[in-house]
Length: 212
Image 1 (cartoon, rainbow, N blue to C red):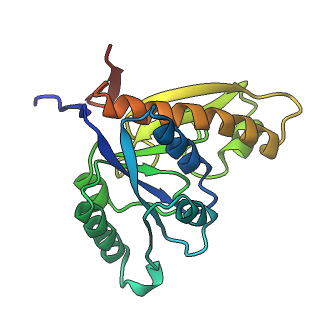
Image 2 (cartoon, rainbow, N blue to C red):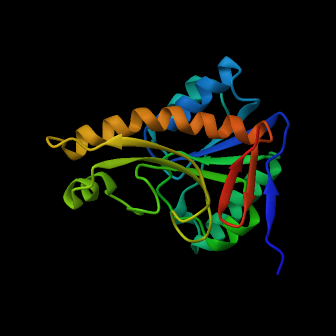
């Protein structure tokens, strides 16, 4: 069986950001777009939370926003089908999950294979899921960090694009470690998006190669 190979497009692209909370990684990506570091535009900011602070930030920036209430849909598949339609209508090239607290359905992930990125506050494949900074401290690991990865149906298990290591200090709390990791998230997420639209990411199997 031939190994699947994907290479990101070299083009000016359109980004959709999905968020459920404050959207600090959305702001980091948008700041990089405004500075010209990323050859793309943020064409949509979507949330499953009507009062998400990130959605309000986007409105103040003059960006198109969209809220869909999950309770108005009969199933998760119906909900994601509607999101899919909204994304396709806007010719989105890349979806960036920035604190989006809903698991995407397998069908959605397959529809946008290699076109969804996520930022996770741990060094995957260690500590997938939630409350990962607390888990890192409890396990006594010496390093934690952040991971940008492509999204697949298996949660937090997609091909890794970039990582940043952060030392776990002996007096760290969940909050202090989270803050230092967040600083690195704001660096590597925009960088991963930049590489994507410069056509420099090549995926072979579950490995991501960064091209010169």
